[in-house]
Image (tube, rainbow, N blue to C red; front, side):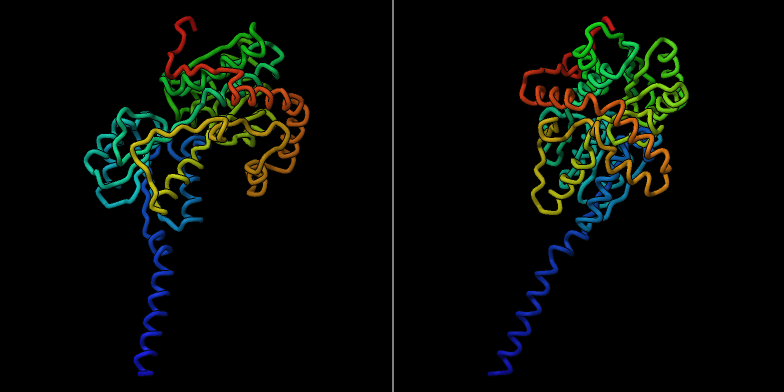
Length: 361
């Protein structure tokens, strides 16, 4: 009888260990595949933000992931299908250009979970969740800051591709600048490419020649050319998606944050924890921190990290700190007030992605 009891106790202990280890093992088994947008990794912006979300999920949740960087949107379906056909638990498509491809592949693999960044769907299938952002709200803050810091009363916007999604950035920027200075001149041009820094530089230099002294971009890797021009001509620029304030130190005065990394991480977490809810278009706004402007008084952790890993020197770090103190900190209270007014509805920002870009621009 004692021997039977002993065996029962041992069995119970073994089962406790197995069940205790179960969730961790399940997390390690979760595989995520991500297909990046045009421009790929190294854009220091949109794609890199999505990738950071997966790196965080790997570190904190124990998942594994792989990625594909299509050379052209025509390769998107093949890339998405590669992950789905190999049994990945979650397949993520990044960028509005991938919307149709992701919906097609998702219909072929109804048991696979999908997430799409930057495009809402009508009648969202149960195995898709879309992750979208109120770029027009964050860009309004960028436009207001540009107008407040411009000495010439002349600012610029450089877009990647002339499409409804990028109009959301342009429209917010335009309205924010006009809110501060109704007479401000706003130059706007599209590069037709998210990965062409030379084209971004060329456009920005033309705007500078025509009087712009602050330029905001929503152009992915093309935007690095805008920063080059700003540094060469000693004007200011505003970054996008990620904190780009360490690029061209002292010239990138702020960045409009689009927290794709957080949205990607939360989606992966929902799969790991078993509460993924497909069939939804999710929006992230100023109110919930999904979009924002980088601090106008502090340099921020990404800039400190850039210093610590040798991307920028101590002298460049001090240049950024001095720029914050002299150029942006004086406007922090005004920008924060505008942010509060947008959140509580006192300022209504039009979404040009829905209403359309005005024909007279």
